[in-house]
Amino acid sequence: MLPQEFTSPLSPFEIEAMLLSLKVGVWSMIGAMPIAIALAWVLARRDFVGKSLVDALLHLPLVLPPVSIGFILLILFGRQGWLGKPLADWFGITVMFKWQGAAIASAVMALPLTVGAIRLSIAAVDQKLEAAARSLGASRLDVFFSVTLPIAFPGLIAGAILGFARSLGEFGATITFVSTIPGETETLPLAMYRALQSPQGDTQALRLTVIAVVIALCALVGANLLTRWATARGAR
Amino acid sequence: MLEIDAAQKLGSAEVAITLATPTDGVLALFGPSGAGKTTVLNWLAGLGRPDRGRIRLNGTTLFDREAGINLPPEKRRVAYMFQDLRLFPHLNVRDNIRYGWRRSPAAERHIAEGTVLELLELERFQHRRVNDLSGGEKQRVALARALLSAPRLLLLDEPLAALDEKRKAEILPFLERVRSSLSIPTIFVSHNVDEVVRLANRVAVIAQGRIRRVGSIFEVFADLGLGDILDGGAAGAAIPARVSVADDGSGLSVLDFAGGQFRVPGAGRPAGTAINLRIRARDVALARNRVDGISILNQFQGRITEISSGNGPYADVLLDIGVPVWARISRHSLKDLGLSVGQRAWCLIKAVSFDTDPNR
Image 1 (cartoon, rainbow over the protein chains, first blue to last red):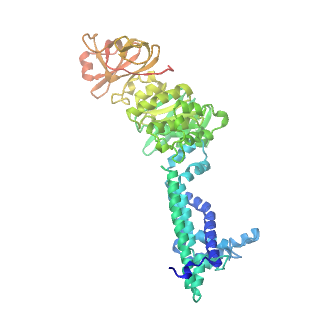
Image 2: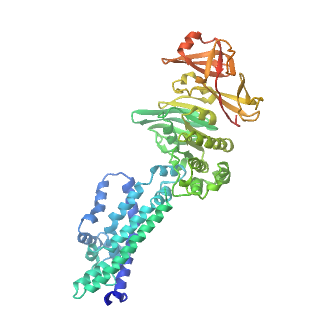
Image 3: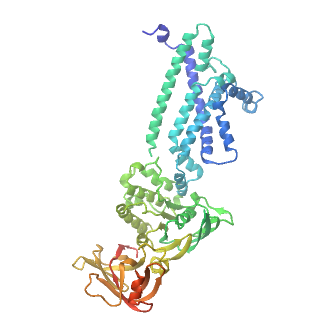
């Protein structure tokens, strides 16, 4: 028999952290996908001066300490920041200490992985097919949506799932950028961290870990199934 | 009318084409591989860009370097059936076929989808994935897709080159059917004389990036000056003929042509059918007198109009037997027989290949 700490139902606090993690993960991917697809296409199909700089900038989140990414976001989205000020002045939007900020931090951290997967799949689309589509009357944009994207679809799914999974584990940039506010920005990893900081928090941290393991497993198995389905659908 | 006056450097070679030709019917771009045939098709489709010059199709300027015009491919309405087909792997047969049709101006869709599907016998494949099709079926899908995009000009890049003889025989009738029932101006690239004679009515011979000769297939293939291009035994004349007796009782068909009658093994075509004959130069022997006691049925007397002998072991002799016929004989024989221009000689035709063409 498992000890009682493991068999008791989820507490409201745990449910809140779990749902918040899922919400942040899903929205970070929804927001990041258009940007990731555009970046992936440019990197896969265009040559321009400064391409390697763009490529390097994109990969910074992989190599920089996450805390510094959070700090950069803090500067950019702060009240007087390049992005924060116009957002607040024109739209009345602030993302600091909000779940939206957590989603932005997750998206930035996941971007290199997402773009990488999508870029590979776009580069693998035969450009001769795109030329054929144009000779059949499709404009460049039309070709992109009717040929390039559908054929690269399995890669798009892989990229999105990868990004989602990455955001579930996101910690450093998030805690720096939006702090840890229960119900607003306290995702599973942040909740775990806070539990560990308090005396007798081990059990709580362990329960949260089990939840995280279950979600991650579901996401990875789901990704596998989706990719298989998409590959079969677009079988070559 | 198609007018091309353009050039493009490709590595160390240059393709420089000057060509003005009517676009009705089928024009073959004929020449050895690497001559620049596909480059010209790419110019026409807008998938390749000449370095200089201009291209006009029926009054529309497709490309003009000086005027800075380069109509994008999707605005040209030039359909392209690629040698490698390029079917869309993520779409089924029907969606592949409809890809261009959906994007064509409704007012210009002169060909109905049903007509094409029926013509190419594709009705029952509509919901199949393109990767589940055989090679010949894929060819038909690619052809249907091109036809239904309502093209002003249809480009076929070596539609038969990648196929073995059996598949060729399978797809050829479809190409002939399309040509005779849809009458879309077509340019088709080939390095095979038999295909050109079978499908085209005009031919532009292209070699080393230049047009060498343009004209009807009968004129062009009677030109001894093309001996260097038509090498490898492919050289020979094309002759229009008509079936007069389908079966003479012994399994032979009698074919009328301008110089008399051929007798060939069962053409399997009813009397009255128009036929293009191909007589390869290497299948023709020459003699000073009629030869008796020989198995060759077709012997005709004619006048030698031209002799071309280069440095090789062979000489090409053009003989007028009512129509021009080439014979490729050894230079040794030429000397032995003492043949010269203006003399009369007999030609012995060992084999004739033929194909029906209801259009001619």
